[in-house]
Length: 386
Ligand SMILES: Cc1cc2nc3c(=O)[nH]c(=O)nc-3n(C[C@H](O)[C@H](O)[C@H](O)COP(=O)(O)OP(=O)(O)OC[C@H]3O[C@@H](n4cnc5c(N)ncnc54)[C@H](O)[C@@H]3O)c2cc1C
View 1: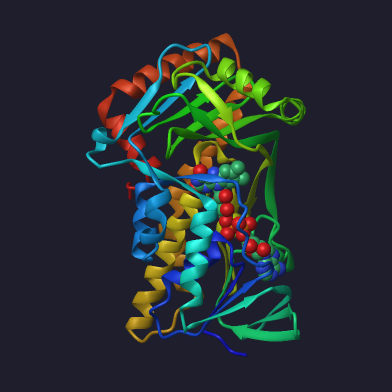
View 2 (view 1 turned 135 degrees about the vertical axis):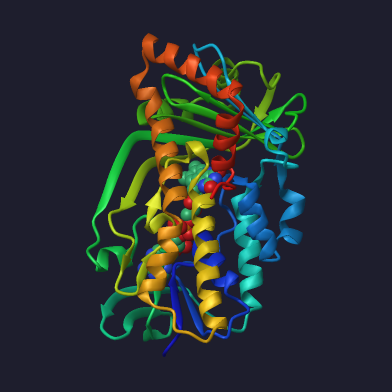
């Protein structure tokens, strides 16, 4: 079977890319190992640019009812004075972004994909081997036996444990933060006023992102042993602990929903492109979720890549390895910023000291008051800077 493009991995990133190329006269194969999930508990903070991209994919109709706008981001460090307040009016936009449960994004992407005729969606099908010659050949195990698919370009969006990356022997840099995150929803007694809070502390961080119906998406990070201990608490005891650790900026917490645990690591591929194969999303860079950058960064890369492909196809020209390199070169600055911010925030708790507290306090007051710096930071965070 010959395709113009093969995408390995039909998770959020692979499915977004396939959908963004829907109107092209290209034959595309999307290969996904598992059937669609409906139980993903993650709650994503998405930038205004990411949401615009989802709107361009015609998904907003299906997502709008579940999307909560973020009007302000409030970052503070327990024990430090000062805080950084990033307000949507600082950069003259209606909102900085939205919080959307990942499962609705997954469902919307897959519902749209099924309708697209230029995408052959192989699901449940697993790529087992890759060979690079003039074309790239993939051996795919499906329910009805083995298939050989070929294409000049392969996009590996097959997650942090990427089979394609391993097949190519591409090395990774892995930073194990020795931390996990508890993800849940917290029910509030009053409105959150559409403020997303990030409260860093000596153990890790607590993020409280606004959800509909006076609820917050809660991400609580700490070392594995602490998280195991906190998971063993009753819901009531966990609510009391959360209230004590976070304080009363969001008023009183009433109860929480089911808790889930995610181990936290950064996995970064040392090479992103090799002979017609591009690593994308978690396959290229799985980030600590503290700065909510992982999917946002991947969507930015998907948008740049699909624009580059589209302009070549419309001009009737071949899309080559050089075009892949050019597209990824363009994304370099945003990628560096997202990786740097996620990693530095994840590291802060490790270096907790009175001196750092003072520097952080001054830094926060500075960033909060120096308008051009603040605007630059917000633009970077919400993916609006070039
Ligand atoms: C707790 C938590 C909270 C987060 N919050 C945010 C947030 O607020 N904002 C944000 O921007 N990001 C956030 N992220 C990051 C976000 O989850 C990731 O960026 C995103 O899920 C990456 O998606 P992906 O498609 O690259 O990878 P995956 O979701 O891992 O998808 C990979 C897919 O490839 C398939 N696959 C694997 N191997 C094969 C194979 N051999 N053959 C075929 N298919 C294969 C898998 O079945 C899977 O479906 C968060 C992450 C975590 C853990």
